[in-house]
Length: 306
Image (cartoon, rainbow, N blue to C red; front, side, top):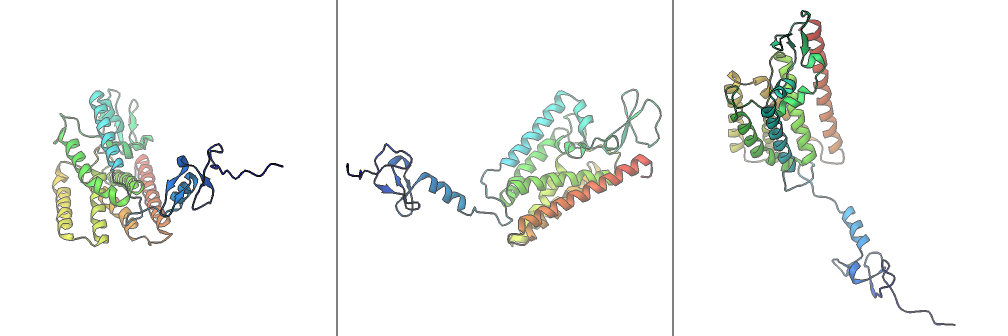
């Protein structure tokens, strides 16, 4: 009878002789499978399992920490791509800007909405089921030769988005940040619909006002020095008032209110296992409210009661 072999081999590479054991699972591992540990070496599988069990660092508002403002980059890119599409085809603006209710005449012209309209005319906007306008309008901007600002419209908005967006994204984490941005854009469009349904609007400024409100709420929650933050907020409110003559103050105010509400939910949710659920429920509640307001307003416009 032959004596039992005393040679030990790696559990992943049976043909490789090994005399080192993983300090977690006690299996033999070869040099290719060794990973430095605080004490001794660990195998590949134990290192992966340990990484999964380590608690990930979070921001003060529950988001995952990230050093690259990837969502802000993507949002700026989408705005620029939409602007290029507008320059390539002027019909993009009419098709996707925010509009609650309007009429298109037989000559292709755009006319003021009325619930009872002549033959040959057809409805456009949310009253015609174009609900996508609630968000697509937030990614469009004035063409170079139109409006008070022209090309400065997108330039100023993208500079503002870059300056404030990356700060807010770093504090909230990507998922909470994109939720905040979209709900702010939606809140902006809904207030326009409620107050000025016949006015076509476009631009990212409503969502950016939401980010401004978020910056203020977060600073207060974190106990930051409010002097600089208050100056920023005063400037934002002054711009809201001054720009009312040439831009949609309803859109700016709607974004500001929605962004403030979302961030308050982020900031003051309980800091325990319930936090994510409470934050998600608050965002869902705001979404439902905005949808209900939209449905009610659109129904009243169709019936001629608005």
